[in-house]
Image (cartoon, rainbow, N blue to C red; front, side):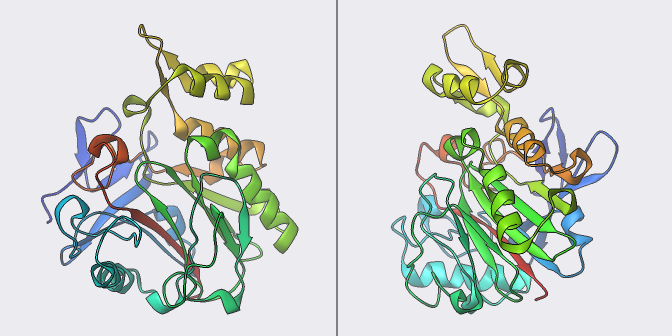
Length: 297
């Protein structure tokens, strides 16, 4: 597995470590045996944080779900999915029995996870429905959200030690999921946006994400012309290329997070569909990736 590397930036650059223009690490692909996963150095600097983003590598699922599918709802055998969880949780040093996740619906609702929620979705039935964002200040409760091109958003309140993990597809992005998450952390935990660090995780890049005009219009309405012009590139056929990474960065800034505290992993799930599940690249024939975030584990 060590010869598998990430494509990033101009796609001619290939490495297991992604760097920004200043030479700082933004994301890193690791292997523990056959299990591949991504971490973000800015979060590794927080000693009380456990985190990661899964790949499609190192699991037991078959065919188009091969092999680290983490969804119970895409036709996989339940025991395959549970074995995949055991494998990824082992390398991330979290307990699968404590995972909390919900059925996502591309909305901006946020659920406040409490100690008694530990295990909901994995050990207990998935009773959390309609929440695309999870926040908590509880120790040892790993939050989990799911992806196959949509944008994972990680939030760490470095002062109050609260965390948030949100799923932001184009609907979540245009409705400013990052802003809703920060507002919920402020309300529930007294978080100050200036104390929060944010990571925009692996997801589809601008070059791979073509959208129809009706989607582009939604973004034109939601953002100032100055910002919208940076997000959208109109093509000759009336379609647009949409930059969800820049849009989510703009949302984080609007929420009050300092620019220097926002990291974009610059990892495209579609460009790297051999490593990640990509809805766009597979035309919907795929499993699910997952983002994991916990504190003081």
